[in-house]
Image 1 (tube, rainbow, N blue to C red):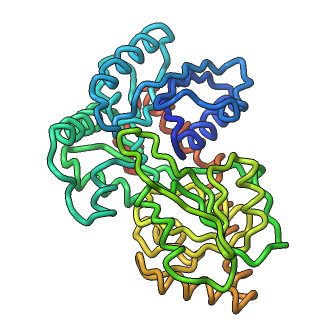
Image 2: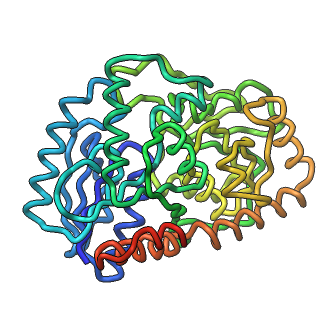
Length: 372
């Protein structure tokens, strides 16, 4: 089978795409990959050593970026040309906009996240009206409506898309996954808390960790520079006696941090899935997570929850773990087993491969969606 996949190189979608593409290639499929957002770094493409993989990097803007309308039009034309030249069996889009392409090939659109649900989670209301927002809503709705099926990484995200874009959408859930071999599940941990995420992203609310003092050191890893230059502003974090800000880290650096720190703080107020908690769990970190519906769905009883967006409750949860090493180890084991059983890369690839086969063979996708 030949699958054309689109991705962006800005955040977790790139990691997700690599896991999926590598899994498909390992199983003998052919992959054409097209990326948007920015040209990737050498480290980001170091895995691309396969003769059944063809890669087209671009710097076309992403649909959620301000003033991206013309860039999306141009990128759609570019993508249409690649589809015409390569003739894949199936299209897998990680952007909503390309779901509207007319090409006579089965189309999967993956709802990783969207601007409207992000805004609701962060601000508790609809985003302010603007011509750009009207364009964005129309673009997303059209892409969802024209897809053969919409995949979301959690039930919560699939339901949320249905609330904000009420056109009838056929959808299913396939959880994201990570390769366990990439992480070191160490039992020898230091007494410290780790948080990983984009510091500029209000939805990650990393700075909630700084609102209270903690009895142990806190390490924060993540980019402080917004990828959309129009939205960049001051976003400073400085290391101090109990805080270490180490900026954006590559995968090997993050793996080392996960293996060292005993507790991972998942502070997001908006997280359709969240790969960082999975990576931490696969490294046997105990998870302290914000009590939001998506985290409840994914982690069930394998995580220790703090009251939603409450810095006092977060501080109490961290203190509880460090006052009781046995409890911390128990939650670390539970998170580890949960991640291995529910969020492995192989399980994710199984789900997509089954879906692809149904679509390519002209099967009844309604039956697939009902069973997924």
